[in-house]
Image (cartoon, rainbow, N blue to C red; front, side):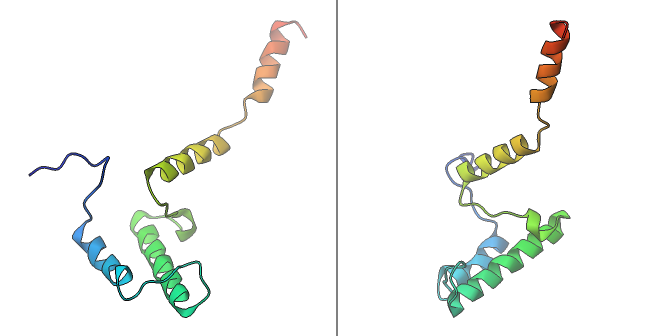
Length: 101
């Protein structure tokens, strides 16, 4: 079967699944928690961040994990808007030039 409904769900690559399996079972922990299980989870997340960054030629701080598509889309849009040059001054200059000011 050829699966074409990746908007609903996407099959995991086997290597990704194998890397995740320990953390979906016995090695669970909240990576934001200070307890030992949380610290171990945080270390695993940071190792994954470093590995992905190395694979794509980025700095680990540039790799952001999100919970899904909507959060990812919002992050990309807000990032693009925040990096776009402000047009407010240019618009005012154009209006002033037209009005003879």
